[in-house]
Length: 133
Image (cartoon, rainbow, N blue to C red; front, side):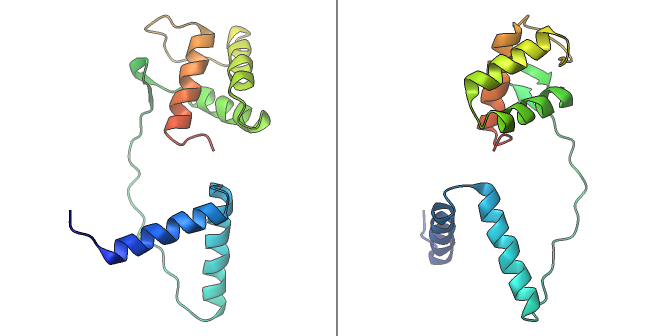
C-alpha cells in the first residue's frame, strides 16, 4: 500500500493526543472543544458538517444473533458501568440481580440464556463496540 504522509501525520498526532489524555475519550473531546472555542475566540469560522438522516441502528449480542438490545437493558448496563467504575464482575452481578428481580427486562430470550450469562455477553458486546467508556 502506498504511504500517505498526510495520513501518517494525522495518525501520529491522534495517537500522541490520546496518549497525553491517558486514552480517556472524555478528556480527548474536552480538549478538542477547548481548542474549537479558542479558534472561535481568535476569529476563525468554525463550521459543522450538514446534519445527516439518522440511521436505524440495531445492536445484537454475539451469542444471540438477531436479538436487539432493549434500550433499558443497555442504559442499565451503562449506569452500572459508571457506578462500578468499569468493574466487570460487579456490573454483571448487579445486572443479573436486577433482571431476576424484574427491574430490567429483555425483549426476547431465544437461546434461553440465564440472566448471568446474558449480562456477561451484554457487557462484553457493549465494551467491544465502544458503547461503554
